[in-house]
Length: 424
Ligand SMILES: NC(=O)c1ccc[n+]([C@@H]2O[C@H](COP(=O)([O-])OP(=O)(O)OC[C@H]3O[C@@H](n4cnc5c(N)ncnc54)[C@H](O)[C@@H]3O)[C@@H](O)[C@H]2O)c1
Image (cartoon, rainbow, N blue to C red; front, side):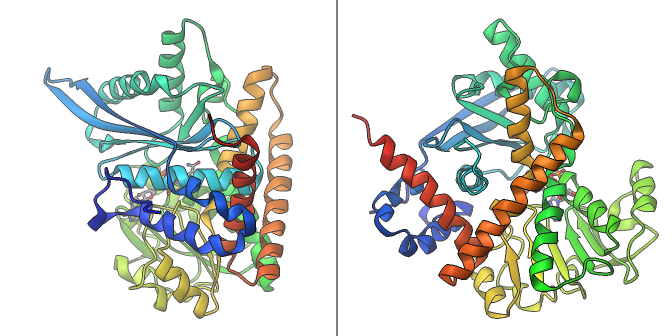
């Protein structure tokens, strides 16, 4: 069956093509459930919205926004909102698909969704950003809700944006609806530990993987692309166990220090307005050289499509932990596998964020809040168990960890699809 919808450009399918290929790779392992596989290749619903914003200078600018429900067989949609000038529908579709898989791998009672706005938020004032966020929330209001679809932060969105989204939705509903978004400030029904959850999860999963490989984290060399919410937290967790952060890259450039970068000094530099790429405590290197630094662990934690056929052959790390969503192309996946590099896929590695988002959603429903220790213990248990199941499935079926994760997830999603049946 032709899975390419008419609204995408066949010549430039973008990240959605990567998702389709990942689904195709698991299809032969699904047995009778393969009957339902097309379900995963067709997003359930897509909303494209126009967001007019009155700018501070009195002019009006229009921004394009999306919200995609990929699959809701296992529960309401769940997935972040990305603000980026290059966001495309294909990208948001793929990100929504990855959320379906991620929620199912972890066993959370959610389907997959994602949203995005084509905007570079750094070019907006705070007032413009608030108006954009409120109008976007209002426009996608028909799709979201605590039992329908629950957005959360992603690239370039944060707790403040979630607070504006919650407030806008609540005003339109005429009552306060805490559970409509997660990743909110703690004072507005957010959860302790949510901000650090994704990076912490990268570390928890990475530690389990390192243990399987006999790789001692004390003294291990770690390179991280992206020093935002995910990358910076993961860096701190690895450093706290004695690993050395030998290379970092963000939009401002790449830096290297064979003995390890002093993260406290870096933070002081960033807090003072310095750019990571110009941090005086490390050596600036070319962005392409970042991928080939001598390291044991590589953590892509920025955007998709970063590890491709051009750099996959030269990566020195034994272990790749996908902190970002979709950072590795299928071609690069094959190259890394053939070179014996262990790659732990995004749908497992970065699932800590949505796991604590799930805790936040549950806490909001009962208005009863857990301690940070409870949050972190539950996070640790859920991710460690999920890692063990994926590792076991990979051994049993002799497939990569990505295909093993898809195998477990697709079975759960398609079983739900089969039990619910097709209406009418
Ligand atoms: N925040 C979460 O809870 C969460 C959860 C799951 C997955 N993710 C994924 O993790 C990734 C990072 O998200 P985040 O929340 O940390 O975003 P963020 O906006 O906090 O940070 C993004 C980082 O990536 C860097 N970056 C952006 N473009 C780059 C480029 N072209 N080259 C090098 N560096 C670049 C930025 O400078 C920044 O340091 C994304 O793929 C996101 O989908 C985030």
